Picture (cartoon, rainbow, N blue to C red):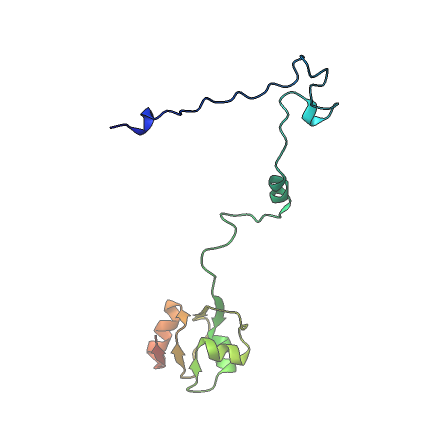
Amino acid sequence: MILIHQLKFNLKRKKKKRVGRGGKRGTYSGRGIKGQKARAGAKIKPQEREAIIKIPKMRGYRFKPIKEKPVVITLEVLNKKFEEGEVVSLASLKKKGLISKNTKAVKILGRGELKKKLIFKNCQMSKKLKEKIKIQGSELKL
């Protein structure tokens, strides 16, 4: 049984031609006159690297947060915009123009007082708001 570290190539490796050391090629030895490519140890940056450097970068770890932060809405706003017994959900908030059409997450905070009985559907909410809903008697559907 042959192990991986025991494998050997059958082909002999061709040695790289050493350019710029006299001999039959003349003074420049096929490198041309002057310039970066004519020098010893010439290393040219790949074109992709220069393109990457030009792209503007943002600060922070991996640039974008993993989760999209929810849009915050307070009870004060809900009291102004919603009537008694209405459903507060992502769709109804979009209809009323409180959030944009592209918004995917909303969090309702308990700042202010809950003056009307509302039905809350599929919304994130703070602990204070949940306590206020229990005290006031509004519905909470998850």
